[in-house]
Amino acid sequence: MSIQDWTFLIACFGLGLLAEISFFHGEIGISYPIFIIGFYLVFFIRFRLSFQHRRIGVLLMAVIWVLSGSYAIYDNELFYLLNIVVIPLLVFFHIVLITSPKTMKWASIPFVFSLKTKFLSGFQYLVSFGRYLFKCVFRNTNEETRQLIKRILVGLMIGFPLLFIITGLLMSADKIFEDIVLQLPNFLLRFDAWESVFRAGLVVLLTLLFFGVFQVLKPHSKEEHSLAVGDKKFRVDSITALTILVMLNAVYLLFAFIQFNYFFGQGLQDGFTYASYARRGFFELLFVTCINWVILIACLKLVHNSGKTMKVILKAMYSIIILVSGVMLASAYQRLSMYEAAYGFTMDRILAHAFMIFLMIIFAYTFIRVWLEKLTLLHFYFISSLLFYTVLNAIDIEQIIVNNNIERYKDTGKIDIHYLNTLSYTGVEGLMELYVLDPEYPELQTILMDRKQQFEHNKESSWQSFNFTKQHVTEKLNEMNFINE
Image (cartoon, rainbow, N blue to C red; front, side, top):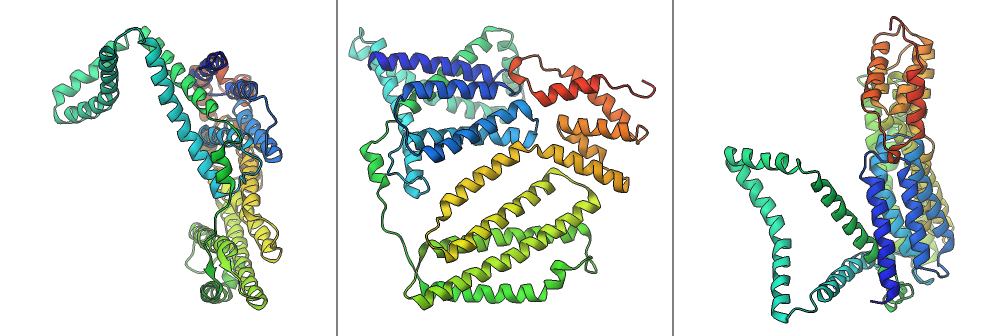
């Protein structure tokens, strides 16, 4: 290894230390965007070159900043958990993309293989680096001693997982043995040094992870150029595809014709509740999504058109599938709106509405693509999905839920305060707004006082967990004056 590589290893150690401080000291908040700043600072210092795929790269960079920034601004539990997985995947996708050859098509199967290759190459590099370090540490010992130490280390790496599994089996087989083993963690945790050892080990692992990934991001490699070259596509005969489409469209048109009044009727059919009415609509939506969408993509990509007449007939079949799918989506959207008017707004229902709108956009673009063949599907699907997910993070869905439920309460006098209490700090703010409107609402004051005590008891003191919404709601709740308090 060169001096430059050792210097970069030190930089990765600093990044690993920042990751440990940011993510393993309480709830994640403002520490996430701070880590992203440090990560990309190290990345751009390491790769001082002209990056490729700049337009999609800038979009991905903006998305990563918005998603990481949401940890400091909002307090949505669902996206808090999702983004723990989504952001690292997007970051890896981004850094591999902008260091890939310009000829590499990112919306393609070869690029997926390139991602997998980079990921596995990182681990292979770490194995080679481990061997290099081993030789450096034990270079003054003889070959026999080095082999002995190497075998011991390999034995420890294999033995610890086996020990964990076997110990678990023995614990389930003998109660006394289980009690003895369970007392060991209490004994070990008495030593404060164990936490320091664990955190130090975590920093080392993160350092090696960052170092391994960065070291294999060598752009314009021969392997990537070979992946950038497209291979022959599998084709489906047009007659076969037309047969399938005619059969499906016949069923869809019959279904839409018979069920038209059911789709767009102003009330419920006899024997249906709002719940069953909405659930049936949502399962129809899933059916449309899983079947029609896949069929459309497969046909547009794989079907071989033998002539102009056949091409027009196939386009007509595609258009019918899209239009019938639009009818089903509109029906499902209407029924869910009726369900919300009757039972209130929740996270699942708002997300379902948003997903239906997204599907309508997808099907509309696909309809245009059917008649304008020069347009690309995968680019639009990927970018629109990315923007859709980012917008969901940026618009504060919980605030929309609270506002709609408050408006519904003003119109009907009905509201589910227990559901609002299950939301994050935004839900608590909604309960405070309701308390201003109606201080005598049953159980409302008790819930707010309980949440106030809970916030005081679980108060976060670490800077990593700072969140603007938490800070605002906590201060607002502390300033509230309750009746008979």
